[in-house]
Image 1 (cartoon, rainbow, N blue to C red):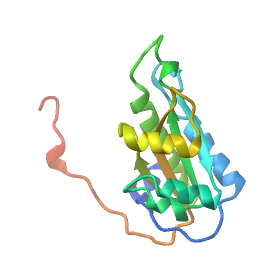
Image 2 (image 1 turned 180 degrees about the vertical axis):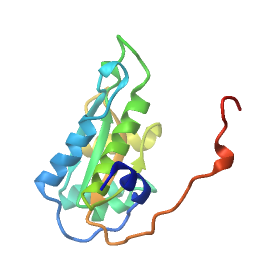
Image 3 (image 1 turned 120 degrees about the horizontal axis):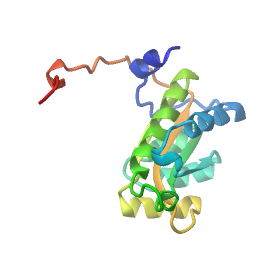
Image 4 (image 1 turned 135 degrees about the horizontal axis):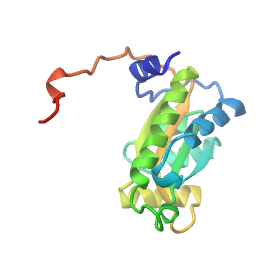
Amino acid sequence: MTVYEAIRTRRSIRRYTEEPLTDQQVKTLLEAAMATPSACDCRPWEFVVVRDKKNLEELAACGKYTGMAKDAGAVIVICATPERQNEICPGYFPQDCGAVAMNIWLQATDLGLGAVWCGVYPGEELANRIAKCVGTPEGVIPFGLICVGHPAEKPEPRDRYEEQRVHKERW
């Protein structure tokens, strides 16, 4: 699969089969995550991988849009560590962690897995509930959940290109 194919065929997958993910699949997803460029190369991220069914159910109960976590093969909790950027280039962790989420998502697509990104940050209440579930230390912010597993659905790719949103040289 090419990157272009992964971008065009990637869809939000919220239903998964019971087939477990392999350790190698999870490692490949994390390698893709850590290959993400970041502002000033600060890499303001850490990851919590949740695979235990009880813990997945606890994450699923955290928010209005996190229910699919209970049936995922794994949930990768992307955690932001803003203090890593404080000295050089503060404030860029949302862009950096967003790029991490996309790398994981595209890698999952390439592996034939399904994934969905559940946004957490900047929702303080949801972030606090997720932090409690996964035990993040103070100063570490749960940024988002990537629920991933073997897809139990296969939505068709969509063409979302809209020429009217493209401005050349100036607005």
